[in-house]
Structures are given as structure tokens and as C-alpha cells.
Image 1: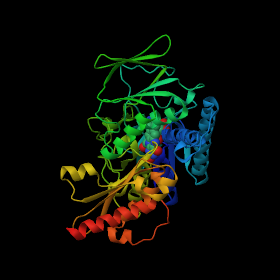
Image 2 (image 1 turned 90 degrees about the vertical axis):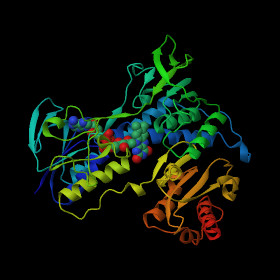
Image 3 (image 1 turned 180 degrees about the horizontal axis):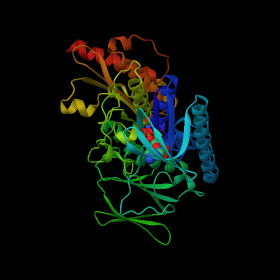
Length: 459
Ligand SMILES: Cc1cc2nc3c(=O)[nH]c(=O)nc-3n(C[C@H](O)[C@H](O)[C@H](O)COP(=O)(O)OP(=O)(O)OC[C@H]3O[C@@H](n4cnc5c(N)ncnc54)[C@H](O)[C@@H]3O)c2cc1C
């Protein structure tokens, strides 16, 4: 039996452990904080659950656009947070039990490489153990980046892991950082009833996302009463007697009851013995891996956020599985990021797959584009949806679909049809020949594909 040791029990680690056990390896997984990792305990699960509560609050408030008016919707954030933490803990223990039921040894503790095939573990009970391994997987994740000018106190100045300690809804939440995490929480707390100020150092929120999509979100935020400060770099966040004060580079000062600092992540790659063993990291500390998750050292693999490849739970899980398929001699396909769907859980959501508008605009990719606003869709009208669009990218010569963007409620579900088209190289003609439900939002996806056919025939 091949001895496999996995350091880190998030999606990168636990999915790999399941594959390795299925392939007959002797697997030990070491986790410092809790099985499921940050993904389950503090990041994906509680944040998406909080967003689901925010959506329920918005639904309960009614939709004046379609004649539903409601009052007196109250949020008991202490109750909500207690439930979120319980769900996360339950999911963590379900995953732990599943690993154990598959014969995997799960150790609570902190691990470090002694060399490429020996691992030192400081167990949670205070004892130490040394493990030998033929294959090692590093899946140690990442943590919130902190700034000396915005010292986190866990009460008024918080990182995203600490938001679930609120017993009362923040009255005035200042969110520093308008990337995916900042934008998702800003939107959620606004929907729950907080006054939100979003401080963005860029021209537009969500840098790195499709700019048309980011514009929709920025406009929606502003329309709903959020204060969005663009081109505003926060230089200092301090605690005051009653809350927080955020000083901007312009000299302007923004005050609030609480501040969420969401300015990116740093890899958990220190104190792992990487330099001693020869595992290469880049300047930012992320572990360098190839498309089958190999590091620079034979027998040592890495997966997930500690590699910085594409910081998503879905990608972490696939990198971990690929590592084990490769290490244990099973059939393996290299990681393909071209078909990864990702989603920003704002309201509306932004889902993307494949090549981006930025790639097309810069000339890196050649594609025809059609952008169909959802406002033209019959189902959208019935549901009072006025914002959002479907955008499809196809190769000019063949019509093969190479990417798309959906900005809509539940875009995370709608993107699947475009992802399927990208994965299987379907053409806009093939997509548009499929009869969709009438009326439905997915009808706009087929319609956008049809419009690209017309554009092509005219060319
Ligand atoms: C607020 C937020 C929301 C997100 N939402 C989504 C989403 O909706 N969808 C999505 O796909 N992605 C989402 N992500 C990204 C996702 O959380 C990460 O991509 C994912 O957690 C990566 O998994 P991982 O296994 O690499 O790391 P993690 O989940 O961070 O797990 C790594 C584990 O390793 C452990 N560890 C570290 N060092 C050691 C050591 N020396 N010894 C033992 N154990 C160690 C840590 O305790 C940790 O539990 C979100 C991220 C954030 C911050």
C-alpha cells in the first residue's frame, strides 16, 4: 500500500484523501483547525448561508416592481449566526466521519515537512508524532491578508472569518476592498438592513470580473442606497469610542459602526519546511505546481489556495484529486482552467466561464460577442428583474462557444449550459437549436446564441 500523507483538510485535502483511499492507498490526513478547512468552517459555507438569509429577507420584503409590498421584516442576526456556525460544524463533522468510514486516518494537529518523505506532526493533545510517506500532498489553504494600518480587533475591525460573532446587525458597516469577498458581504449586509459604505481603490467594484457585469452590480448597489466610494484607497482604519474611522488617501474620513477589511489572501506556506525540502514558492509565497499538481520536489504535490492557481473550492478539490490520480498511477487529465465556472454571489449574481471580455478586448483571444439584456426576457419581466444580461463569446470562423457571462438571479445555475457548450465545443448554432422552456431566463441564453449565428451569416 502506498503511504500518502495529506497536510490540510479543506477541499484540496479531503477530496484528495477520498480519491487516494479509493485507489487503495494508506492515507493519513492532518488538519489543524477542523476538517472541511476554511472552506467549510469560515469561508464558503457560512458566507453562502448568510447570503441565502439575505436573499430570503429581500424576498420577504416583497417586490414593489410586481406589486408585492411587505413591511416588518426583522432579522435576528444572533440566531442567524448561531445557525450558520452550527451548519458549518455539522458539515465538518459529516466530512470527518466520511473520511474515517473510508479507512482514512484523520489527525488533529499541525504538520511540517522534515524532508520529502517524513512529516513531523504536533498533535492537538500536545504530543508529537513522525510519519513516513511515499506521497505528500500540501493543501494548507490561505488566510485573510492583514494591513498594519488596519489592525483587526475582532470586535469593530474585522476580517471575514469574524463576522459570524455579531449578536446585533452592524448599523453602519464600512467594507474596505471591493473584490469578490468585499462585494458579496457588502451586498448581503445591505440586504439584511445595515447601512453599507464600500471603499474601492479602483474605478469600479469587482476588478478582475467582466466590466459590464461589475457595472451592473455597482449601479444596483448605488440604487439600493449603498455608498460606493471608487478610486478611494483606505490608508488607515482606527477604532473610535463608538465605532470605526476610515481615513482615505484623499484625506476624507468615513465613519461607521464596524469595518470589514477584505483586501485579499496570503498562502499558509510558512513554517511548513518548504525551503529546507526544496519546494519552490513564488514571490508571494504560493507553492509552484504544474498541471498535475506536482511541486518542484519529487513525490510532493500541492493543491488549492496554497498554490494560488484559481482560488476556488471547486478548483482546489480538482487539483487534489488530480494529484492523487497522478501519484497513484490512475488515468489523469491535466488541470484545465478554461472550463471552470465561477460565480460572484451578489444580487444579481455574476457567473462566468471560459475566455473573458478582457482577453478579447486585448486581442489575446479572437471571438464574436453578443450581449443580451435580461430586460427583454418575458420571464424576467414577470419576475420584476430589470438588471442583468447574458453574454456569449464564440470563435468568429466556426461559431464554437468559448465563454460566457450571466448576470442574473441564480446565474450560478444558468451558467451550466454555457459551461457545457465550452467544455464540449458546441457551436452557437447547436445551442440555439435546443428548445428552451418558455418563459424562462435560459431562453435568453439560446437567444444570445441565435443572435451570434445571425451576426456570423452577415459577415
Ligand atoms: C469569504 C469567502 C467566500 C468564498 N466563497 C467561495 C465560493 O462560494 N465558492 C468557491 O468555490 N470558493 C469560495 N471561496 C474560496 C474557497 O474558500 C477556497 O478556494 C477554498 O477554501 C480552498 O480550499 P483549500 O483546501 O485549498 O484550503 P482551505 O479550505 O483553507 O483548507 C486548508 C486547511 O489546511 C489547514 N492547515 C494549514 N496549515 C496546516 C498545517 N501546517 N498542518 C495542518 N493543517 C494545516 C487549515 O487549518 C485549513 O483548514 C471563498 C473564499 C472566501 C474567503
